[in-house]
Image (cartoon, rainbow, N blue to C red):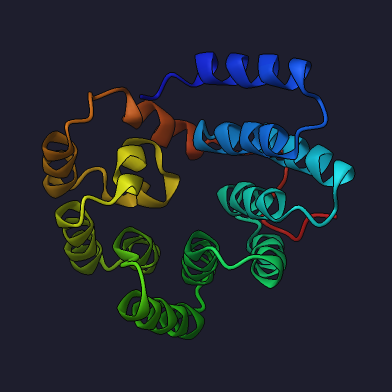
Length: 208
């Protein structure tokens, strides 16, 4: 719904009640990332990994935060760690998107091939595939797969309005049409997009 300040407050309260919960700590980092508060996301995910260096979700969320800061080498490293311990298609999609954003088209296309093969074997990962196409700047195919996800009633589409991976699609009329069909109430996504363009305290070099 885009109500990030309320969400963050609830997660902080949950963390007070259960400070050692890995899931709560990592999800707080994820919310910071969705709100484009990338520095806060990095700090929170690092704190989570201090509790358990092998927690897959924390590596994935940290990778998302690094990608938002355009620290692509660090993001790729974290996604690869998450993939080694897990197997969620969201990790593979995030890796593919980041390769695309970093200019490594061949790696991104290779991951697309893997995801399409997985989709034929099990659950269709149409929304995740759309993310990689968005990273490649192929808007037509991104919308093709988003519309497939819509027909499949993919629950991931409920997060469409807040997902940074789709920021480059927001100005396209097809995006707002899809938001309308899903039934999501509009909020100031443009404000988030502007926030994501602001300079951060760390540049695009590899983080320490």
